[in-house]
Image (cartoon, rainbow, N blue to C red):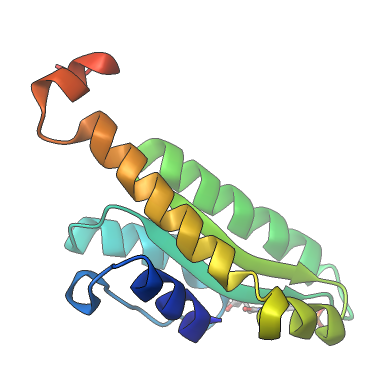
Length: 137
Ligand SMILES: Nc1c(NC[C@H](O)[C@H](O)[C@H](O)CO)[nH]c(=O)[nH]c1=O
Ligand SMILES: CC(=O)[C@@H](O)COP(=O)(O)O
């Protein structure tokens, strides 16, 4: 999925030098890693990529809620878009179908990231006029 995201970004003329990557042990660590990335790097947008697959316990349900809420809260608080590149699947087969081939969701995540990065820049970039348009001073 990460390779497909990088391909999608390259196709949209995002330079390698402008891409920062971090790896995490599991999806549960995505929100704090995204927060750390925002704190230590100048990022326009974060794409959080992972797979959650339903298991034997309630862990999946809690993890889906915690990760999605964590990433949503983070993007709203930081005003930096966080793309939800997390597959939440009932089975490995569902995940496979969405992570690979023509149906890979990663292409959409890259496109959405670029669109939201441009949107953010247009609203809180250096232009005083742009800032005024959303009420920042
Ligand atoms: N069950 C899955 C996990 N579980 C691990 C958590 O993400 C986390 O790393 C752990 O609870 C320690 O905080 N992670 C996945 O990425 N996908 C899963 O299906
Ligand atoms: C917290 C988890 O992701 C993990 O405990 C899920 O375990 P299981 O796959 O046995 O439900």
